[in-house]
Image (cartoon, rainbow, N blue to C red; front, top):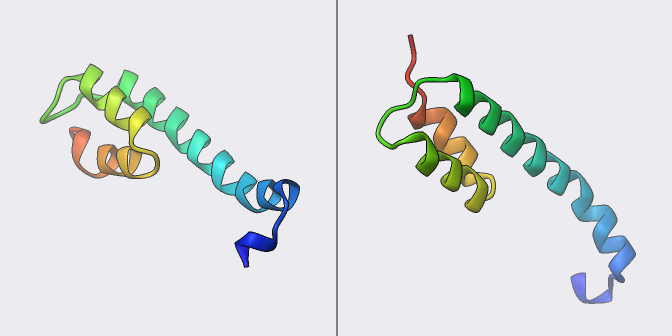
Length: 68
């Protein structure tokens, strides 16, 4: 199925996923700047958010933030 797709069709298919990943990463980096964190320093959380697409931001939102 994917072998028959040209680059334009594949880009149309992946564009929403790429945009969602970018928005999630920016959201988490802004939250990271303003939140207190636990388990790791902020620089380490920033690396995790940037390097591990989708998984990194979700892990930060679930585990990395200190809740009041």
